[in-house]
Image 1 (cartoon, rainbow, N blue to C red):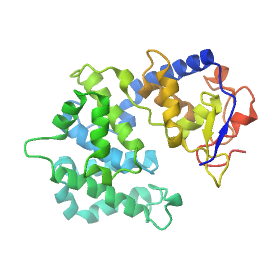
Image 2: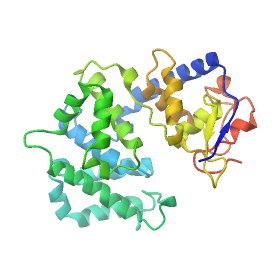
Image 3: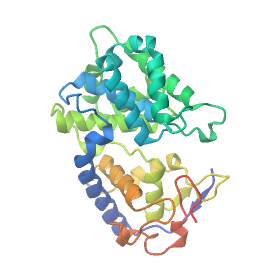
Image 4: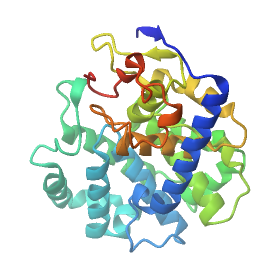
Length: 313
């Protein structure tokens, strides 16, 4: 992938921006965490095993999908099948016609409203759903007797955040359901479980500064436009469309260089900024809360050009 060097923020400005993004993310997450996870109201937060199984399915299905539609889809699956979905997915498999009805009700006849196949060519949206749902079924079917995902997750987290992340990423069954060698969905799920064990269940003493940066295209765009990073990686065929995964490492290092900030909340803050103000086209810079530190917001065309998915004009 091509790379270009751009002017970056001064270290003090960068730290102020990252700290402000964290404040935005922390505030947003605490108000919207249940909606972000798409947890149904009928699923009590105290039901740890069910919560983790639900979130695993939610994360697997989320990849390359429309997040809002995926939330609706997983909620409807749970509403239709309840605990059977989480504990006896083989039974759900026997009623797969009902599953496909829900898939088409929410995603359209071919599921295109759920999944954007894009550069995947001939792969159908239904195919993406099928192999990810099958991954969940196989995992539940092969859990060791007497052991659930709650025990496995808790045990891994006692060895640190990276231990849980590696477990999710490299599990012999789960790795077939993720996308890429360092899947965003596995990072997202890791953060969610850390937060639940620390903040909601109050079971483990984990430093939240160990959480991960997900860095999807929207988050990467914010870091490129603001000038937090100077080396921008972009697609060969579309010169202003960034490749966020190839910049995740450098973004994480910049965030980790700011004492006390929680990477999970910085990521959430950047995503919130992207959704509310830093649009793909015609960003609302005048109302953006990070404009004071943003090079694009200050009028730099070099920084304004970066986009998550389409060429910015």
